[in-house]
Image (tube, rainbow, N blue to C red; front, side):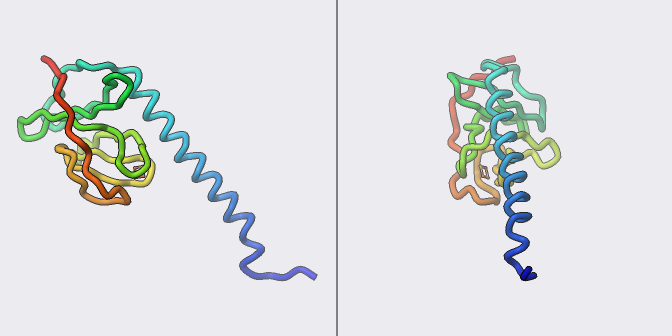
Length: 125
Ligand code: FES
């Protein structure tokens, strides 16, 4: 006898979960690899721009907003995703679970509960 109910959807849900988990893992790996390829110092970002670079094996986010250049850890305080700069919002966004941080590292939203630590600037121009 075949029973129709929520139990029959479990394998499909598990498959969807595995696919989504794979996408998150790929995004996590890509962020770390890309950060590794650009070492500080980097040129000072233009107004409203941000860049992720590698300082001693750790991703650092350097941005310029309202004429102020800042450097923060580019590692999400949730589960360690490497952040991307969002030009439209001037925020650091996590590709893994969508936490967002202001240019100064202040947490805006998402599952991350802590701000990004500021780090000494190493940009030059
Ligand atoms: S790792 Fe960044 S929101 Fe989860």
